[in-house]
Structure formats: structure tokens, C-alpha cells
Length: 298
Image 1 (cartoon, rainbow, N blue to C red):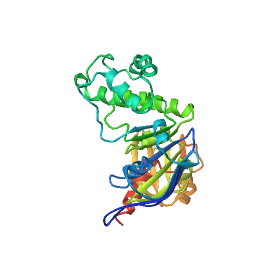
Image 2 (cartoon, rainbow, N blue to C red):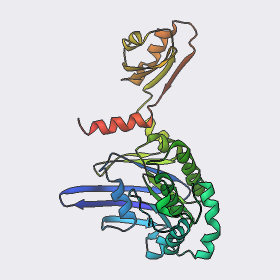
Image 3 (cartoon, rainbow, N blue to C red):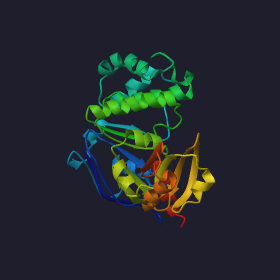
Image 4 (cartoon, one colour):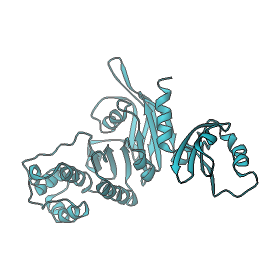
């Protein structure tokens, strides 16, 4: 388990992290979310000991040591490969830095290239690959030594939906073999699909922490999905409705200012008759993200 306890970091007058604490158990995925400058990369750099910090970071019950870093896979936000090398040379070079012999890594390369659908062979030069295929090679470099701790900084950035799905499969495979995984993303869809829990940072402070269900439940059931012959204007006029999203074909989402308004809205829409759809749910993670970001400007 990765355990982060009360870490803080300042860059001059700027407090990048302020008493941040969370755990990432083995076999779980943590999503780290927040706007640019919230402290996500600083958190990763602290875990990797790239910078000094206050507080405690432990891996499997002890302070991270040099030998532990052989078992960490790290994908930085700034992608960088040695473009004059071949794919094989690049993968083996980085694997050897993690203590993996070339004779162990070399037989795996073709399988990984196929798994990520890389358009090239092991003898292709990095410089001859498209940007997307270069990114996939860097992902392979991050994963091929089967790390026990996986740290991914914006891993989905620049990936099309097909390649994003390939990455999701690889991340879930790492989870299944027991790796602890933490990744940052601005795309709440990926966080929702993959994460067992999440942490949201805002200006270095933890403003949300928990499982996705727990986080959503904190905000009440303020999303009401209905199918009705009423117009959007009529729905907007109902007490407790803040705004209405038209999903077309008489399907709407009512964004409630008060979750307790649900029963009264149900009575108004049905008037004792059947209604095809009426489902009151917590807000989506994307909506919660926008709400917490908006609080910063209040």
C-alpha cells in the first residue's frame, strides 16, 4: 500500500500542497483530479522523491528506498523518448534502468507492441513513429517491467478513444495482478470508469476524498431524469428546479437546487398516471468537479 500522510510543499510564497493525506491499497486505482496547478504533479514528484517535502510517504509500510524505485512505473506528463533509438533499444534501455535484464524484456516486446497496436516493428526508429505511437511506446516502457506501484500523470492525454480503451485494459490488468495505481486526469469519464477512489485537490488542499459513490452521495440526489410530454419551460418553472437539460425525444435532466423537491415534482408530472422514466440520482463526477472548481471563485 502507498500511504501519504500530511505532506506539504511550498515553492517560495506558493503553497503547492497543504497537509495532503490518502492511501492507495494494493489492487486499487486512485484518481487524482483538480485543475492545472492544483498540486497533482507535485504530489507525484513527492512520491518519487524528486523534490523535498514535509510529511510522510510510505510504501508497503516503509519509507521508499532506492530499491523500491525498480518496482515503480512512472509516466510523466511531459512525454520524452530518445528519438534516434529503435523501439527495442528504447524499451530495453529504460527496463534495464529498472533492473530488468535485456534477455527478460526482449522476448516480450512484440507482444506488447501488438497489445497496444503500435504501427511499427521493434526495429522502427522512434523518430519515424507518429506522435500517438510514440506515446504508446512510452506507455509500454512504463508497464513492461510489471511494476507494483504505477504512477500515471495524464496518461489519456492525446489518446483517441480506441487507444484510450487499450490503456484502460492495461491499467485494469495491472490492478488485477495487485498493483497500486494512481493517475491524474482532467477527463472525469476515465476516472469514473476506472477508479476505486478519488482525491480532488484545489490549490494544494484536499477538497474531496472517497469512493466515487461516497463522493457523489455527499451532494445528494440532485439529478432527476424524466421522460414527459411537458416542455423544458414548464419543467423549469417547477419549484426546486435550477436548470433543465433537454436529452431530446421528451427526455430531460432536471438539475435540482433541493433534492427534497423530488416527490413533489413526481406528483406534478404524474398526477396519478404512469410516467415512463423518473429517476433521481446524485450528480455526475463531471458536475461535482465543476461545482468544486466554482467554489474557488465564490
